[in-house]
Image (cartoon, rainbow, N blue to C red; front, side):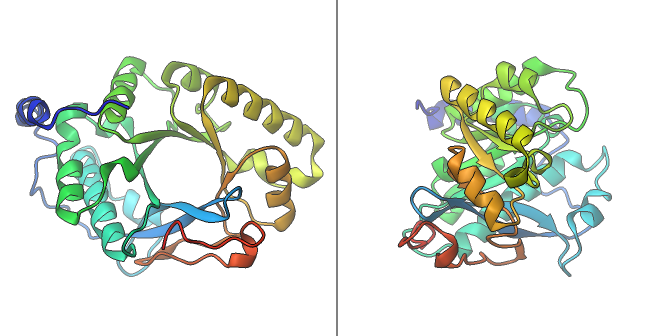
Length: 275
């Protein structure tokens, strides 16, 4: 993977940043928030592969209570603040020597210019001593994407910085085959609607089996999210998906990295990926 030269970046990002008034550093938000983290487990190696950062209120309020306060005037600043908060908190919570990934959600319409809008992310990683190649950005669309070329530029720019990219909620709403073919992310996250009760559903198993075969041909990894039972996990394992996430392993916890019982990981393994 080729990374962007820092000197060239500082020049181009500085020019782009000056054009973008929506996400200037220092813009205060009219509400406070923090992050919860949920582990992503690698069943093959029996380790914690990473954690997803999820928005929460400082008093534990759910994400919706915060997101409902974000409007057109604050969407850019909120996106920047989420990235910075997630990186700084995750870096502080991670044990020395950790290699666990940090997955951060973003809305493509909150990115004005990829090179400019990523500056604060890189600066937060540098301040925190956090390796930027351990960052993964998840994108999704809850309504039909109007500017596919813009999102493609974001994905390409993020890859050039060394980040992983993921398509969230695959199989739900508009996050489907069209986005996969247009963007070809590093990873797709299968929506829980495809996976709920999959152990007892031959139809769901056939669909997921086909998705796994297709993504392997494309060189895209699969992650199964929203798993709640041992039967679902075992079925997913037999279908060839190694990366999993859900309440079966751990619920999101505000302000800390929740552990996963060794007994829930691969036999005889330990959770040494996260420390």
